[in-house]
Amino acid sequence: MDKSIIYNKIDKASSIALITHVNPDGDTLGAGLALYYFLKKLQKKVSIYCDATTGIDRLDFISGESVISNIPSSEIFDLVIAVDIAETYRMGSMSVMFDKALDTIVIDHHISNPCFAKYNYIIPEASSTCEITFDILEYIESQYDKDIIDTLIASHLYAGLLTDSGAFYYPSTTADTHRVAGELHKLGVNTNKIYTVLFKNVPFNKYLLKNVVMSKTRLYDDGRIGMAVITRQDFEDTSTDMSHTEGLINMIQDIDTVQISILITQAEGGYKISFRSVAELDVNAVAGMFGGGGHKNASGCRLSGNIYEIMDKLLYAARTAL
Image (cartoon, rainbow, N blue to C red):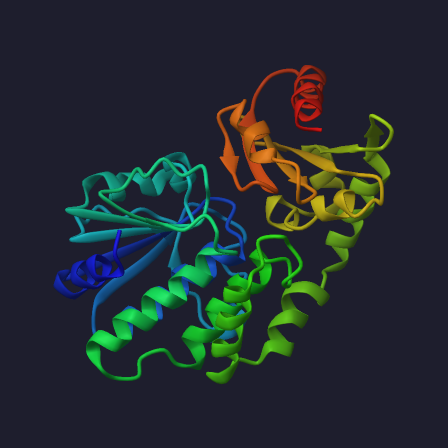
């Protein structure tokens, strides 16, 4: 799909809703909020939503305000844009707005995305949805022939770019990723502050949860597979929640022998499964065995049932990828 379609749909729409995914990360929030402030500068009637009770304020330090609603609107929007959402269930309760909208667009970088919108702009090679969103906003800006992307917008895009690329460490980082980061830096982004807040300023209770994960990590197949389980009791004992789990799987993946890491987190209605892998191994295919997906080296799914049976299934699936 060409970027011109996105421009035309935005230009003609009188009301626009932006949807970010459940268990929000920096990429979905960064892309969604960048679009929100961009559309505000175009004088559009726009609102942004996320089906979450925690984590939606993660990037509020950039703007100093909270603009994301976690309550679905009954309004029928001219256009709904889903950002960084690979499956419809990732919209949670916000899917009702998507289903009723006159037009729908998905902007995403997950290779497993089934193209569930009317218009789908998906680039699996991109490091993040924020990387894609920057190019889209640059194009739209050129059509209006005026400067629209300011420091606030650029800062949200940089936050998402930084988190989803693992601070430019993950294999998905490309020359285009660095190009976009450079352009955002030119727009006045305080890169040091964003890195410090997102990667260095760790609450003590998250440190406690990190200790739990490391103490519960088990290695299999000569250390090539690492696995840990976080339970509701672990959350209660450390005064944490699902929003504190982002990045924890990387501690397992950092073990020198580990080629595939698996983090199982007890959630409402079952378990949230996250996979990571070294560059040459495909965990998107592993997640696909359970109806999930994502990226070659970072993917996920959801499962329900007995935890020990789930662990056995995941180990068997991971071994097929070794």
